[in-house]
Amino acid sequence: MRQLFRRFSSYIAMSAYEVKHNVKGQEFYIALEKGKAVLQYENEGNNTMNMYHTMVPSEYRGKGIAGHLAKAAFDYAVGEDFKMRLTCTYLQKYVKDNPLPEYTSRVV
Image 1 (cartoon, rainbow, N blue to C red):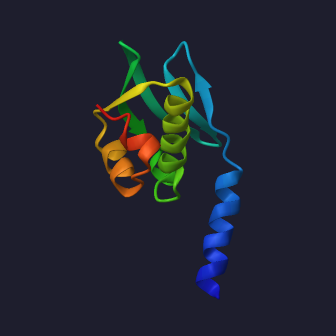
Image 2: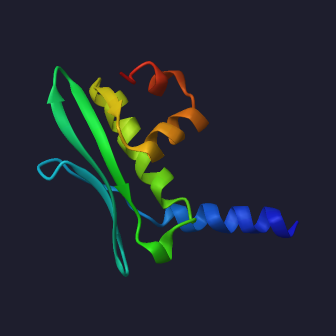
């Protein structure tokens, strides 16, 4: 029961984090009390996003924030019909752990 409560509490805490997309700056980010978590990408042309860097401040690591950023970026790529080049090792692991066809079919 205690473990279920921790998972539920963790889910509620994650829903409080709002992922924003800075199109001009080519990053997805979450503003945190102490800094910000980011997922940076570049448009390579040919409708391809190179997602190359994910960073979460050390005091926020292990709370699922990077996964929250990854999901937002991947969902954006799906919605905009972009291909994804994943040069960030965290994002490579994320797609391996979450092998949804709408994600894996877009990885180049």
